Amino acid sequence: MTEHFLPISTKEGWSRFVADDPPRPPKISCAERDAQTAGERERYDDARRHFIAAGIVRTPAFDKILRSASSRLRMNEHKRTGKLGLIVSGEPALGKTTTVTQIGKLHTLRRQHQDHPAGQPGCIPVVYITVPPACGPKAMIAEFAEFFALPTNGRISHSTLLNTVSQVMARVRTELVIVDEIHNLNVNYRMSADASDALKQLSEKCAATFIYAGVNVESSGLLDGVRGQQISSRFELHHVSPFSDRATAHRTEWEAVLLDLEESLCLMRQPEGDILTYSARLFADSSGSIGRLVDILHLLALTAIDDRSERLTFASGAAPRTKRATILAAAS
Image 1 (cartoon, one colour):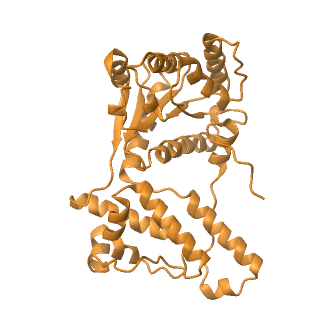
Image 2 (tube, rainbow, N blue to C red):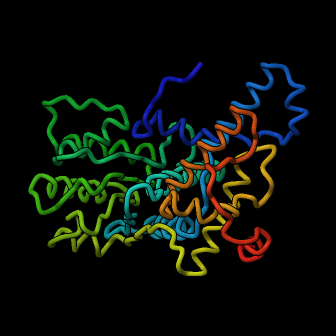
Image 3 (cartoon, rainbow, N blue to C red):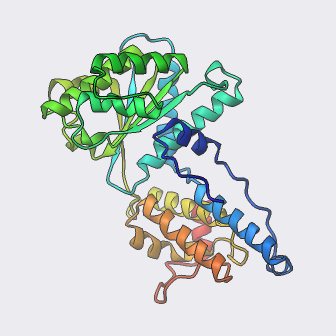
């Protein structure tokens, strides 16, 4: 039975997201699969679907942002004021939300594996919230209250709510706060500017490192004016860009990502490295966007499982860019 859906902007939903780490199903042949009972086949295919959907792609950009977040977390452990943060910006569908949520997931798992105080039962080392449109200061802090399932009736004041949230964050040892859709805050407008100030107040009242993520944050208005300069001085900006087919290094990285994705799809008849035959086609279809690429390949893989073809099938007319062996040698 499917579990009741809970968004990751709630503590229960976030906890499920962190715990969702399905193992890779054992590799079997088509003959072995055909010998299974109908129930066994369905369970095996469901396990593959789950593994595919839960997978992530470790790109050079992801690793760079992860290192930057880790260094700020370590540095901020010893800072009471002027804590450093991170902004992840870029066009839609480039994997910004995936990047920041995976960083939060990895930090939570690391704390649990380290037997760290923040990883103990009842603790919540990472908080994830999204900024709603036309958000004022009280509504901004209310997103945190809703994450923790705290009461947010209309009579409670902004300052009381702010203090309550910061006290809860201290009690559950929150170390990392991820604020997504940050482009909804434009400090040139009074209400959004006040909401930005509320985030700053919260950061000063808790020990957490803050990561902001949003669409083209540089042009959203968040970094404009005096308030924006204060944010820019403390937050390192990482602009996520689509892959390019012009630079050799980018092409090599793109092909390495394709190979990793191909290996993660668990298809029985997929020839190793065959995906590179369609490198140019996939680049054109996704415009170099890692998010679109993942969606395309995941849908193709699920179709291949359902129709039992067990290999990626592309529409006719997709011509190989070059010999597979040549591309494999360049990507290795």
